[in-house]
Length: 376
Image (cartoon, rainbow, N blue to C red; front, side, top):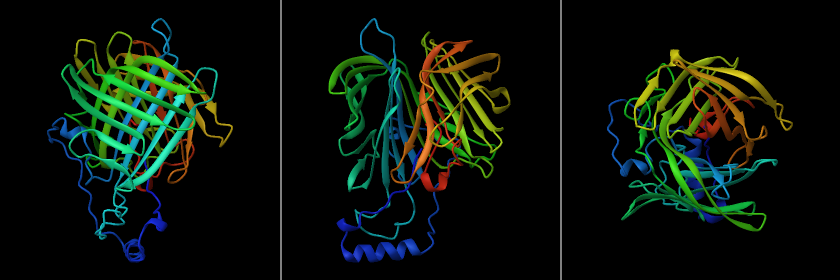
C-alpha cells in the first residue's frame, strides 16, 4: 500500500536556477492536476508507462520466493517505484527542475529474522528516469522494465544495495486484471477519490538473490500493481489496509479498505478472479475487515492488526504473517512508517501474498507523500 516529495540537490544546480526555484517555491502553485474519471479505455503497453500529468503513481511488485524446487516459498520480496509531481517547480524551464520526483523501496522478509529494507530517491533527469510509452522506471541501478520477446512479454526487476541485491525475471501466466470498472478504481464514495489501477497476478519468478555475500537461485510467484491518481484519501481517512494474494489454486484476490482515526471502514472493495478467469467484484457494503490479533511496534508503539478476518460476499479469509515485525521506516525523502509483509491466507481460499497497512503510526499525508493503495 507509499510515496513522497524530494529535497533539491543545491550543489548540482547553477545559481540562477536556485534563485528561480526559490521564487517558484515561494509562490502558490496554480497547477490543476487531471482527475481520474470513469470510462477511460486503458491501452497497453502504453499505460504500463508513466502518466506524468497526474500527481502520483507507483509500480509495485511483491512475491514469495523459494530457494529450491521442493522448498517452501519462505522468502518475501517487495519493490516499489513511486513517481510524484509535487507542483512546486512547474514554472522552471530546466530538465533539472524538481518537477518529477522518484523514489523506491525494496524489502526482503526472511524467516526467523527482521525485515530488511533499502531505499532510493532522486529527481527525473538527475539520477532517475521513466518512460511514458512502456513500463521502464529506474533510479540508478534499481529498475523495473517490461520486455517483448519471441516467447511473450517479461518483466525485469533489478535491485543492488549493501543490504541485498536481486535480479528477477517475471513471466506472466495470466492476463492483466483491470481493477474496478475497466481500471477505474474508487477509493471513496466521492467520484474524485479514485485511481487508475492495473494488477498482474500469478507472475512466475526466476532469478538470483544475493544476501550475506551468498548468491542463490530462486523461483516463486509475484503480484504486480500499477496505479496513478490525483486524489485518494478523503478528509476523514488516515490510511488503509490492502491485500493482494496469489491463490494456490491459480486464482487471485485483492481487497482493501480506507480507515478513519477510530479504525472504522470508510470505503472498501474486493476482487476475486478464479483460475479460469471468471471475475467477481464486491462493493463496499459487501466487504469487511475485522482485527483478530495485533502486533505492537517496539520502535513507535503503532498497533498493527497483523491477523485480519476479511469477508467479501459469502467468502472469508484470515491472514497470518510470516513475521510479525514487517514494519518499514523510510527516510527518503521524508520519514514514513507503515507495515508491509508476506502473509498466508486461509478460509474460503488459501494462498500467499502481501498485506499493507498504513496510517497506524500517524495519518498518512497523501498530499505530501504522493501515497496510494496497492500498493499499495
